[in-house]
Image 1 (cartoon, one colour):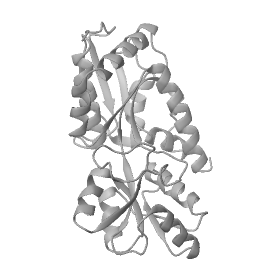
Image 2: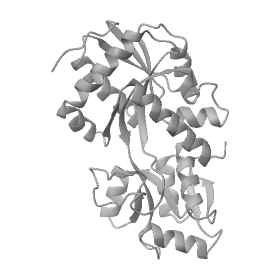
Image 3: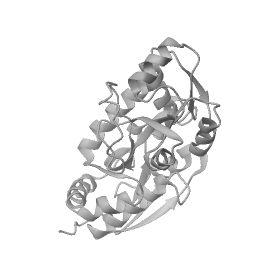
Length: 292
């Protein structure tokens, strides 16, 4: 495998999250393989404040030589659409997508519906009875809106907080369905406490290949949480050229998928051009679901 000549010797990658979470873990795996397949060194800079705004500010007007990068996901879209951030994906130069975290729609094991079709039929027959627990203002609200749309607006979205809060709310019967990570859902399914209606993706998750996907269940949406690397608003052309080469080298490295699997993530590699197309479509999908 070739070592790509990168324009900057040292890269600072700003991550709008605390160390130890999924976004930080994805950034660190990508940084490891970026170093492996280029001649650059990468330093992770965690800047969790402001819902991503502080880290975005650190990068948006940064140098054009590829030495400053932002590592984020669809929360960039939602924060902008909800008026919480002035930065959209178009405020930056997309350089790559790297990995994805899949989530599922989960319900308690004692409910009378065991599939997505049965859930939708039940919701339509009992309008206003069921609640979707989401974290309002974030990416889980988008997933909640998508499911609500599938029921024809028969369910209600309520703010149930973070994933751990949503799990507690579901098991204590405060809400009826939540989105949550595949890794956590797998544990609760094995313990007999939950049932999974669908993975919110068009592709099965390798960690739980038996979980059906939303598209297999007849729902026309796929919303994995895709990790993305951005450069400043303007970057030199040789940065994009180098990224294209580095992404291709990482894609050919089987150890990348293995490293991601340990973090409950899957590869989702795209070059700068492919990333731009993906982000444009992702933003439009999210805006449509939020009625923006």
